[in-house]
Image (tube, rainbow, N blue to C red; front, side):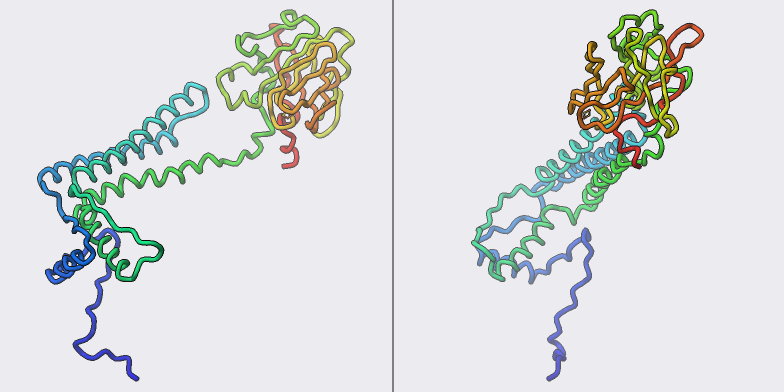
Length: 357
Ligand code: FES
């Protein structure tokens, strides 16, 4: 049996069509067929063009302008995200303002353009479609395909390349935003988590007032104060690791603290000044600030999961989930008699999983 189709009965080859290119103009036969089908299904045929082409043309330009604004604002969002500094607090505020504004303008312009397109460019027509349970009969499915082609025509998406292209242009940066913000996953921290901004000679200034401190000004046994490195008062990234608590002991209360220096457990009494000892304020469990100090027991308490550290004994853990002591910051005095760091911490501050990396 031959598969050959008799001459004259071959169906015409369908033209290859790429999405976004105009549909072929329906022949008069097609139109007649569609009209008879419309009559059979009882569905009113949708008009292909708006009633007022002049007004639609004017609206088309406005819609295109909206899409261009959306495109520019979307690019502005990416530029602000990549270009604006986010270190100090006021820079973070500026960055948030720029990101929020640009994204709002992009989405508003895109929404406004779409709204105007539907209301002013498309023909003003209401349609109703009968719904049938479960799978539609093949005839209805074919009718839907035809209806879809009609709707494409009616929406003007195919006929108005300016609108089509500016809409695509407007959505490009918005589509790129989820990819661009992947940048927040990096870069890898490298060895930066092992160090803080403390270095030899950095003055300890009181958190809040930012004034340097002498042992004479901090001479009440049992008192505790939070200090930060001078010069980093507004640097939230640096302060996330560099917060330090100073605790003043009465003579004889402070036992010889020990700490790891270069992997070796050493006595660190010479890291103290006038019975003042400095510990990292970042809990070694998961990094909450340890801010509660009990004078009579010398216990430092982390409010998150109740890890408790013995301040008189090198801030060793005596209770709770923390796995290691609070790192001690070596203290000394500068030429003006003010408290300064003798070096950075000799081990990483914060959660101890860093030690396993
Ligand atoms: S963060 Fe301090 S105990 Fe969990």
